[in-house]
Length: 452
Image (tube, rainbow, N blue to C red; front, side, top):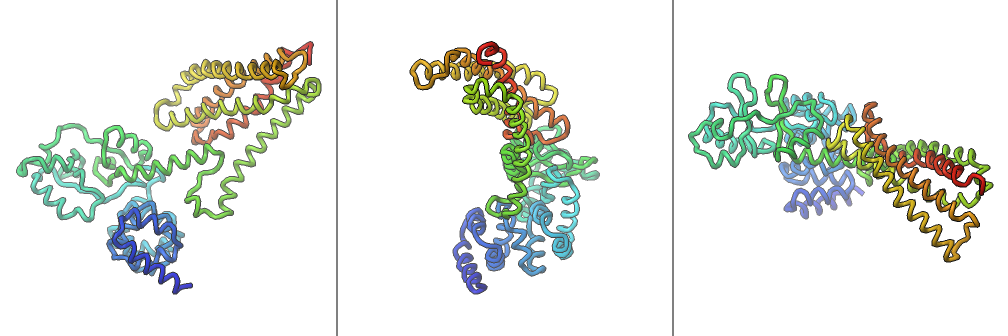
């Protein structure tokens, strides 16, 4: 088996040596961990470092643990600090301590700093490898400095100009401006004087993403309380972070815990744990639906025809609630609305729900009338009242579903929970129960004295 692994690794190494880094990563993701480790050892050192630096290489931590401590530490010392922090975070404590003790002092210092920041903060995803120069340097000196350090920096497209004595951030100079400026000019003179855009280590990474998008930046500096640059968050780090955030939100909206591993990599038992909890909660919620139906058992026995429309009623309310929840969660995430806007959302969703309910109610009434007139199904002598019951119930249920679905994310956010936890299945379950109450309440009013 080992011989087969070695042969496969050698074949892959020869094939991948000249491939684009992204293609190498994609191919390695299809291999087992042992093969990945063999390929990393066989590739030229700098090429292997480039591969390990890609967040898309899912098995990088596991592959490094199969290497000798010396080789793994050498890779970690040569990688970008933010990527090393991502890898070290998921290693078992004994392995983490063993490897961090062997990396160079600069990497160890950077790791200690990065790992001290909360997860999902700017500090946790920043890199400490950036280009900075004192404010009294010329353009020529700055460009010469960039040429000397570019291999060891995350990006050279922005140079951060610092106050020579305090090290405080003065401005950021784009590489394009440096190239096009007079070489003898002082570096601070080549950009307009305005307050530099920066964030603190505690800034949420979603806020960093919004800032980068708003100002069309390739990177944003992270500063401490004295306005000294301690790192930068680059646009590619933000994209990776946003993909992770979006994935978590989508999974939560699906009614499950967020997966912290790729779908193909997560174990069976872990998958069951992630999905069983929410399904069990939703099942308990649906039991309330059974209780509601038991409560209206006498009405069902008197007017059995009402049961034909229960699936239609429940699904319509759940669907409208899920729509509203998805819209509001996304709007909250993008900061299009805030907690104080809840009443505006309620005033918007109320007429929206009524209109949507009227549309669905009209369709429901038309269906009953059409089936009755065409002889497809006989709803009895009171078919018109049944049609009115279904139509009226749909108006009420869709309106209620839209209102509840839009308000629940606000409630959860106000209580300090992730609004994405107001998942579509959860809203649908709640609306199912209340939908039955509304349905039979409308039926009791309209059909009283006839079927009921």
